[in-house]
Image 1 (cartoon, helix red, strand yellow):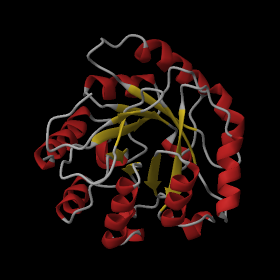
Image 2 (cartoon, rainbow, N blue to C red; image 1 turned 120 degrees about the vertical axis):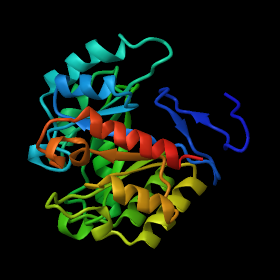
Image 3 (cartoon, helix red, strand yellow; image 1 turned 120 degrees about the horizontal axis):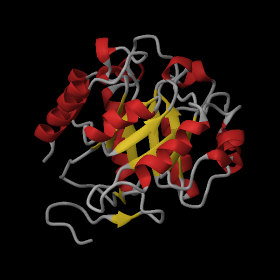
Image 4 (cartoon, rainbow, N blue to C red; image 1 turned 180 degrees about the vertical axis):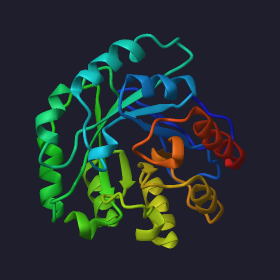
Length: 265
């Protein structure tokens, strides 16, 4: 697809999971990833126009997996049922390094992405081995994860994870927080670090998502200061009572989408 100026050239993913940035760009039109725990919440997200629906169990940790039966039901209900002009991408959290290798093979081929937490991988070699141990359907892309609070999770820092992503030829990465205690990404990660990480990712054609209990006002502030990832991931701030253990609130999702549209250029 040839985009209109001044947008950068877009390179389609091999599994049609979405465009990858190549080089720097003045345009900013990020996607919204919303985490859901079951089919009912997935229906709420899909109805609200969310582009990436991410399945996980928020009560059990940052990337805890939900029941694989939910993945199969979602594959049947959403992946094949969308009209041609509406491409919903499904994502599965596989838990941390202790559960990811076991669960990877259970992800339905209709999904676009799967993520595994890097906790316990204290070196680049261990993290690379973890990625290599995940057996996914060919159509599902593994999205490497970095934790901003990497010391607490016993893993390497986001900059080292990105270097490994680039070296290994992978094309996507998510930055999240491991401990869900009310603190957000900006409590663990300096704004200049975020800008530098986004710039490095885009210079090497890596699609970068940022999550970590981000609130709407924080997202707006980060964009204003030049932190412009390809995707924002959210859970708690789009739930009732703004609590990640609550239920999805379509009005909160709408607030995020409206704010992102206003800040896009």
